[in-house]
Length: 256
Image (cartoon, rainbow, N blue to C red; front, side):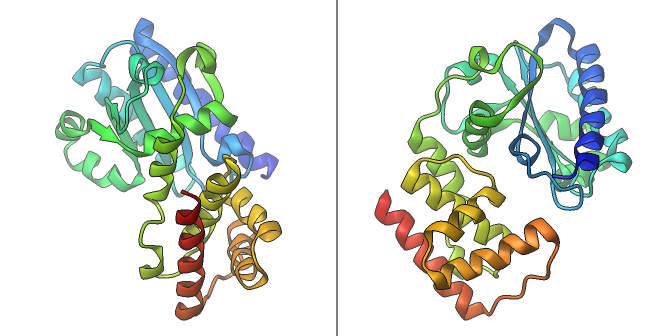
């Protein structure tokens, strides 16, 4: 991770923390970093800034709108992939349920919808999210408290089955998808957890694969890792990718 990328990301987080504290006041339990920035493999060109906001009680409609307007106002200064943020109640963090309820969510995928009708977006954007099992696990493993209570006081245990189900969703049916760096490295980190119970980033999953996969599969992982970390082009024959994805999923399911 480049020091300059890290500094720019933390400068944005500092501004978000300041504004969120002013919006939520005593309702704010804490803010917690996860994702590539927590793992130490953040790249400005390819990564999101991922964080969780933990509250005592559901924010009001006006508070939700204010929270998202902060992120929208910072988009021009943000990395191309922007932010991924979820607001979750303290009780759901302490007493984990799967899939986990959330109060509000935002990412680049929803930015256009938010801009078209902010109030309607805030009213509709709540429910349950299987991805939160993975986010909570990463917070507990490598996360950082940006503000508020320490992580062990806020996040309870996430069952192994819930974490596995969450990360498996990203690679389900992978052999039928178009070859991508994202799928290759996710398959590697899912296998690393299924085999060795290691909570890894995509980059770490790729490096783990180089040491643990047969040569043919390791070559695929190596090409994906070079693209992810250094921007090298990633062009993989569809048949080669299908064989890789099938063998990886077979290994994963044999361990489950």
